[in-house]
Image (cartoon, rainbow, N blue to C red; front, side, top):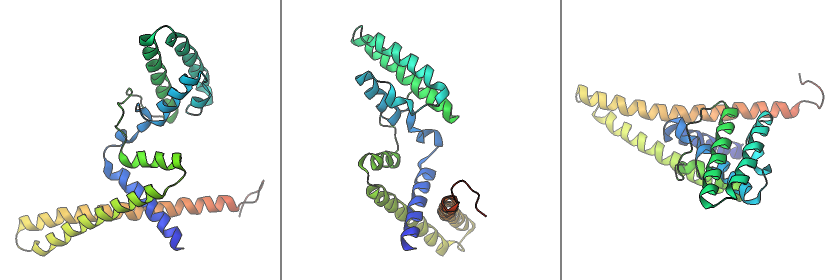
Length: 211
């Protein structure tokens, strides 16, 4: 039970980290030059094997990617400048098709280094096979975020009755703190709901329907 609650809190911390990090488009790191899609594309071009990147696209788009890959391999043999252009062409094609498969717009490749720290740690967790650093970092950010917003609201509450402006300052701090806490609670309940659905799914007999 305790472990389950901790896992839910970590999931909530991740959700809050994303929620407070800024506009959602900035979080779509699959279109960055150091994101996982382009990283796999570089490896595929280096080995001359398109297989590692096919997982990033839908089956119906595989033909387009294979054709773009073959064209890139042919052009990059000409000279270094041609190779650079060919690589860029393939990166853009792969990322565009990948995002189309997700129903997301393609707005061009983003420079390396634009991946939010929390997302980079999530990728690192998968690479290393350990989620401990990600859990620790998100938990620290969550605790700091709650503490900071609580302290601001609590201090403003002491002065709220002094004047209308002081009261408004308190309301602003109060709303900020409550919304942060609300996002945390919603994330926890959301994680619990998904967990319940997964458990129910696993409990169904093979080849039958659960009742």
